[in-house]
Amino acid sequence: MGMFDYVRCDFPLPEPELQSVVFQTKDLPEPHTGSFRVTAGGALVNEWTPRKDELVMEVVSGPLRLNHVTDVEYITVTLRFEDRRAVSAEVEREPLGRIEP
Image (spheres, helix red, strand yellow):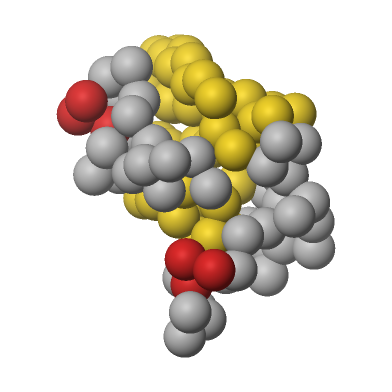
């Protein structure tokens, strides 16, 4: 198991009940259990900085996969970025398999 970062999403997701979820990701460079937020305007910001809304992550381009596991399913949200801003979000849900004894 490796390091991962935590990400909250204020950016509108296709399933509103996911807005309050804190996701995990390994898609950011050098994961280190940091805390990030995708703003309503689509900017990825570091929540551990005093002026967090001004410190936009410059490295995001393409997809950013966010993961969350519930008791019954594995949820993946894929955010697509263009010009350092999230422009779309997709949700995939996969039922958790049962482990046979």
